[in-house]
Length: 350
Image (cartoon, rainbow, N blue to C red; front, side, top):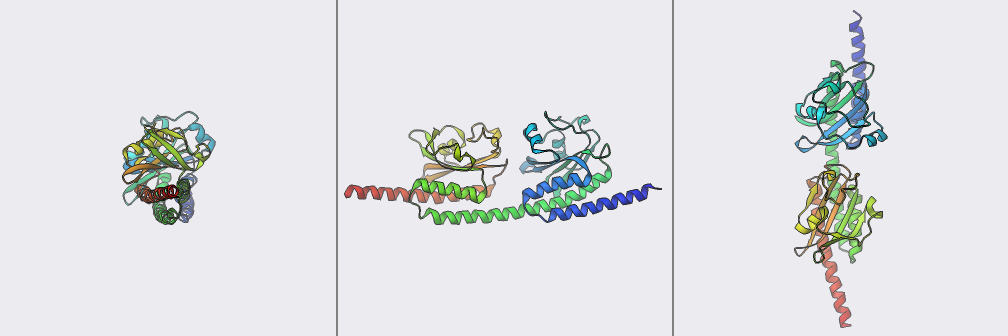
């Protein structure tokens, strides 16, 4: 007879914890903060040693992996984030909760990399918003007992429903903020481009404006020399600024910007780590790359190249913004070239 009162006390405690977790979560609109809060609060709410949040992108690809209970040093030792295989892949496919007493004993388990903490019990719950799977919450190593219970699953499922709303609200807020920033960058660029009459000053203004406006990791502009089949770095903003000197050339048949210069088309690589020809392929902190050609009278004269900090960073709005800026830049370049020609003619006539 003592079981029911104890269960009632446990339920009341869980409900109080759930209400507090939901209030904590819904008070935030910054997407990165919301994702980390979902991860931390899930672990605290259910009582687990470790938690991970796998965020899904197009075609149910795992595009972000946030953890709680593992230190930054441990994550660095573990290495690359998982790709959605094994149990994680099964969760993505099945799209419903999963409880396991022993993670390693499941035939779907793909094992863990070296330096990874030992993980035993497992609870996974999908995050669903209006029928769309936004991601999955993964808990491992239940605290105080050997495995997760049905009550744990029910509690996490309720929290996941609220997490879905919070994630979608933060995503919408971020998209609106991003659109506002994009319009601001284009307006500022329009004003600045019309007054600058020096190419190097023009290019440096553009890369700094893009990095400041969108928090891209690195922004570079390459000048195209089709006669010599080379690309010349003309401006850099970001961590690479101290390592890349303007004026350095590279073969046009290499890397993403080289492909864009040769083909005259925008190119996007969602995951640089899988692209050997990327200009940032050796930089493990760069995860996505986007390059856009700049044309003057149909001739490719330059390439704008931007790096992102996460895989699948860029979307259609980034492409549209850079292509619009490219059109503005091409007009400014043509005006500068015409001004230089007029100055040269004036010197000859003097």
